Amino acid sequence: MKVSVVVPVYNEEKYIDNCLKSLINQSEKPDEIIVVDNNCVDKTILIAKQYPVRIIKEKKQGIIFARNRGFNEAKHEIIARCDADTILPANWIKKIKKNFNHFPIDALTGPVTPYDLMIKTKDLAITYFEIMRFIQNGAETLLGPNMIITKKTWEKVKSKVCLSDTQVHEDVDLAIHIFKEGGRIKRDNSLVIKMSGRRIKHHPLSFFIEYPIRLVKTFQAHGIKPLGL
Image 1 (tube, rainbow, N blue to C red):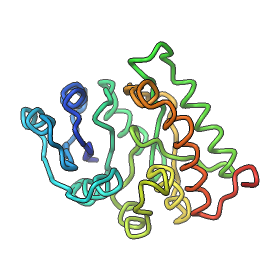
Image 2: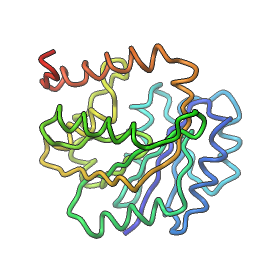
Image 3: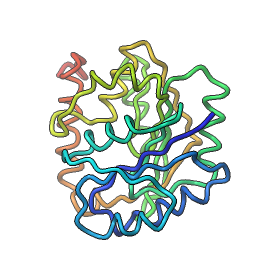
């Protein structure tokens, strides 16, 4: 089993070094690392070039376009995605392979814990997962900075995923398309990664107001009515 890792980037010079270092230092190495340059104008790509990664360019701006380009370019049967501000534990790839080897699943996800906030716990992410399961009648969702999908499943849904960052959360949208196609998403609560809490620190109104509004829009786009909305 081989694993491609996709890292979409847009002006991430403060974070990309630690992210790539954590990928290179995996106990079981990823078979390829793809950095998707989504029009960076800082030193992100110069830093990325110091590592054994494949850099591809996506000119259409937005996480969805960058993610899609990376997934389409991935060569191997398992595609893992993380964000540039994440730090992966040394056993991340090993645990990913273990899950896909032992369970009949089409996608995988796990919690995140912030490394630069006072509260450093995975419990908030797990609570989010449980709320999403309730809303979606027991179906798991995906968490963008820590999500993995089979190439076969991606081929099934790639022409159907929504393309507007302002209308949907790309990870939730992808998860809904997967289970609409009959796919199975597994959550592994031990598959924990660290990520920056910068959005909460620097853009709290966006995180606590705009994010929930876009989540409702995502459900509405798929005919799901959380709490009767």
